[in-house]
Length: 320
Image 1 (cartoon, rainbow, N blue to C red):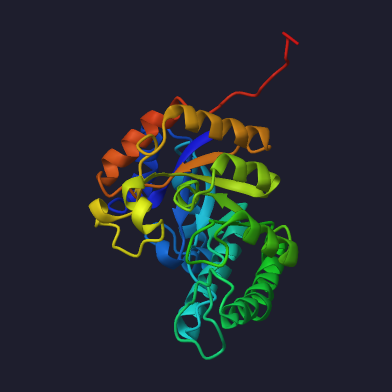
Image 2: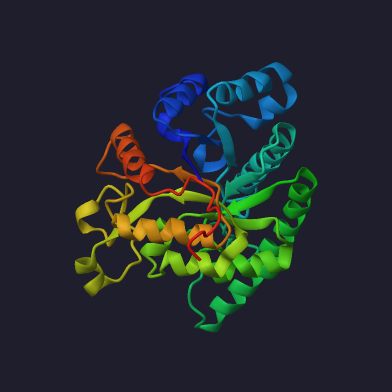
């Protein structure tokens, strides 16, 4: 396994400076924002596709530091009912796939997206219950008329480029749990895979270790981000929470740096289960802890995870 980081935490630095800082922290990989909600501070695929010199400099920045590029991240909503919004995020995906093909990247991370509840909708509609019947009707329309056709088309592009999509299972999105991810994978192909972020699963009441077992080889990238659930709040209000992430004292849950939501014993079991499932790739830190600066959240996650990851090949069981 290699420890990496999503480069947006170094948004105040140039791409070259970010890569040097990542290497200086003792990491071996970098994941770069390439569109959608993540932005294009360090990587604008549309430019890099057509400009050979810029693309060469982009690659040299991480290769010269001995880093591997674990993924291009273009987290957006290409299924948004607003055509201009959806079109922008779809184009970001198309460009990310094209760049991945040119530079040999194997994973494009993102979201599956969320449409409206029908063809005349203005905003996305995350449907989570089957009654009254119009919910089921809207849910079926979202999958059969929007999500599956769109991702079948995108999976063909990805297959041609030798790329897999790493979807985060994110609430507010059609793919928010392993059942939904596997449903889309069955319908559109194995290019639909998982960028496994345990933080989104904790607060939904899932056990990420068990989810890894369920997904197996569908996991193609991993985010290291923790979550603390405030059971005091959940006990009377439940886990769904639309309060701003900054309203920490009143929220049911909060993203935390690794080790501040779950202890080392849990993370040891998580990386061990990943290896058992066949994943020995990059564990990429994503900083979204509202109680720490980007620098402190990143530094604490690095210190914590360096002692958790499994780096060497298993080797022979000489004792068995």
